[in-house]
Amino acid sequence: MGNYYQEEIECAAPEKIKELQDERLVAQVKHVWSNVPFYRKKMEEAGISPEDIKGRDDLHKLPFITKADLRDNYPDKLVAVPLSECVRIQSTSGTTGKRVVAYYTQEDIDLWEDCCARAIVAAGGSKEDVCQVSYGYGLFTGGPGLNGGSHKVGCLTVPTSSGNTDRQIMFIKDLKTTILCCTPSYAAYIGETMKESGMKPEDIPLKAGIFGAEAWSEEMRRNIQNTLGIKAYDIYGLTELSGPGVSFECSEQAGMHVNEDHFIAEVVDPETGEPLPDGEKGELIFTSITKKAFPLIRYRTRDICILSHEKCSCGRTHVKMTKPLGRTDDMLIIRGVNVFPSQIETVLLKNGYQANYQIIIDRVNNTDTLDVHVEMTPDMFTDNVGEISRRQNELVSALRSMLGLKANVTLVAPKSIIRSEGKAVRVIDNRKI
Image (tube, rainbow, N blue to C red; front, side, top):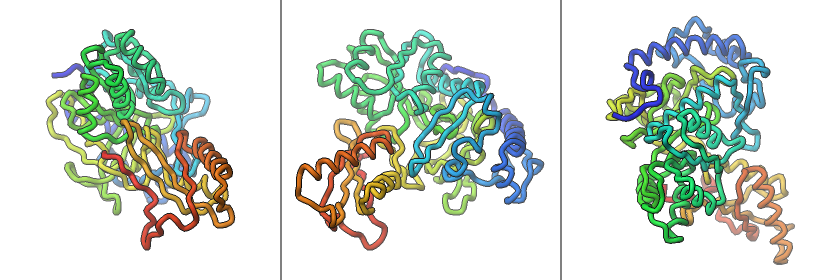
């Protein structure tokens, strides 16, 4: 049996969880109906009112919410409480530059931090631990979420944020860090850097890592575990729902428990939207049932996964989801950052290029690389190296401000990118995920 942060709820009987979900869903539907005109209109269009929702079994009657809805209601049309009750926003990039802004009341933040605290305790954390949070801080939810969770558990929290790898390693050694939180690719990079400097796993006090925000394979997990001498746990979340801690791995390291007292998970057929039974692969849908400021009902995550209610050896009773097994849209996750090809296209068109481009992603020394090949138009074609280099740098900085990360840009001759008959092959992903 493992340790729990909130044992009573984490190990509650399934009927107790259902009862809680029924009650909270009914209240949440009334909350959005009364406070968010957009939701009321959507429900009226679907011919339903709050009285039709008696519990979780009626969830399928409610309409879906998509990323496009969030964009259309930017920045605060989906907020369900007065702005004076909101204490923070977090944000993620949207498909063409319109950001998704999530609002939080103080209670929303407390509940989110509880979810992250559960993940830390599930990875073996307690107040005796030193927890180094090497996710980015700021608008990105990774840093703030795990920082808050670490405080709740009572760990000594080291808010390093990402980057400055030598300093990360110095703190791990000198402050005797036992739990590392960051993206899996950054954990692998820290491991490689340590290995190169001649440090062995037994030279550092780390025992566990909580890694999320991007897809990673079991092979990568083994590699990280061996290089750092730790157990590596997966964590899942979306800014739209709160951030990391929507679900997390336990000692079994086989799927992530969804915090069902805060979120109802469903899997549906991505084409028809029909709910699918346990064990079937489909699109993951989440409904937040405790969030007050920015509650999402039946939000389409675009992640493909499988749900399972099988008994877990850790004693937790909450449903488990697999790692995301793909997506129903074209979003790429590069170094933990959401990138849409449409964002890159927007930058190119704004800068006078045509939409003839190719995005090549790879993983070199455990770090994602992003290369963009762009065709020059015939009238800008030149073999003047200085001019080409100036144009490339211009695009690098325009892409950085759109995406929040560096892309390497190569300008190529007109018509040199292969045209395909069908759907253009815009993205070549060489990462072994």
